[in-house]
Length: 318
Image (cartoon, rainbow, N blue to C red; front, side):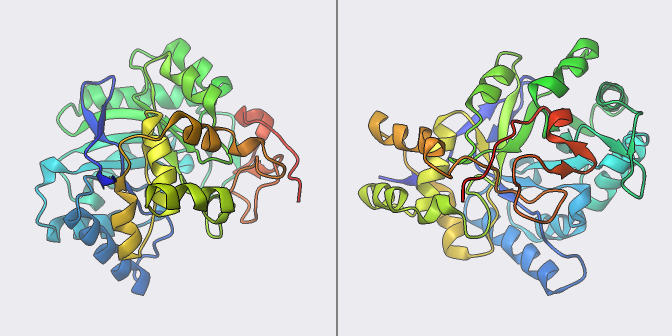
């Protein structure tokens, strides 16, 4: 029997993060989409969500601010995540204070380095700051603003890109936020980061748009067996792996079902999801980052190759 997800995970900083959050990517400020995003966040909070994931690059931090301000949920019960954009790696303090002001909050719960690469305002990749240098600037935030920032972490990092960062870090990242779903389970990466005490967050946890994950007959059959929507089934699988998932939806029914999870999947049913990516044509990224088209496995992402990112490459079998 599915029930409201009240699971949370302890970060290496001692703070706890809810296992399910609401993503805010693809809101559009100053439009009807902005109003929709605000109403979506308020509705999600009213239904039991306690984590909101946003970023400076999404340009919706002010919408998050408005929604939280109008919500009846106390601020201390809401875990807010935002991110440092690539073009601000050389101005980390300025970027953080801007996000804090736009969010209208006394503190930010978790501040992530959105991508390892730094760039100029035209998105030309720069050699400096390196990810390690940027991380030291983020550590400085914690030391300078201990009441305004609780935890720091990274996003879109691999074992390759995290290694030089960990060599200089005096604060271990609390989180690594990466793309995870049954077509890209990232088992080895999750385990590798866990050995350092770094929790994994999943963006695009259901895939994107017309995701094959949610429409595949075997996934549908499993969901029917447990009497839950396919999205709730997949999110249950991720949370049971110890992963924080941040799905995005503006559909009220799906917002509710995405936080109404199963207490446990049987080993044989979990195996179906664990091995889904091994099926022909089912191992690939779905998130269209940096190029605006479906990833093929060897794209350029914000100026870096998959090799530079330390991401696996693969050929999509149509």
